[in-house]
Length: 183
Image (cartoon, rainbow, N blue to C red; front, side):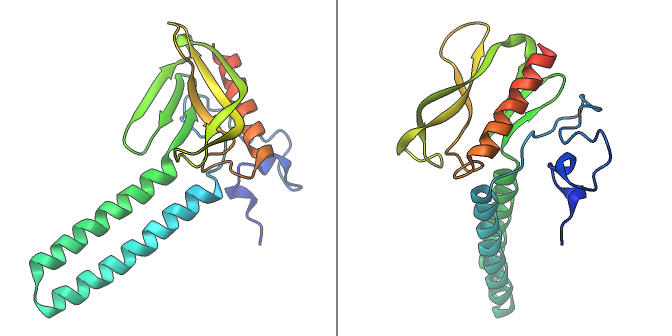
């Protein structure tokens, strides 16, 4: 059962209204991700949530056995796992008229469009799923105005785009489009 109102590809659907824009340029002040979370990212978060449900179930069993401090520790571990899963799904690159924001697992960085010299795609060694192993792939690089080494925004082998070259190219084009429109 297709749910076109939930997808970022609504403009390509057969029953989409004329002029529908999947990136929502009609409200540029709102922070939005120009691509969908990838299957590796969603799958990892789903596994964390599944494990958290088992930990919560064990906390209930421990609490019924009478060891409330141990049950509290289990609930705390499960809450940490749930927060990590939500943060894992939220991580990525979001854009708005104010600038570009890189949301990571532990911290977020916002760069104003005026502070960006260029955003370009480059063929280079990239990390596979964020692990130390590197493979040849594409990376979307942000060159700051102040100079220095370019920052990697997204790669073709990260959790959002592994095995989905077309999705990486669409996301890179969308971010480059936002940069060109707002710089």
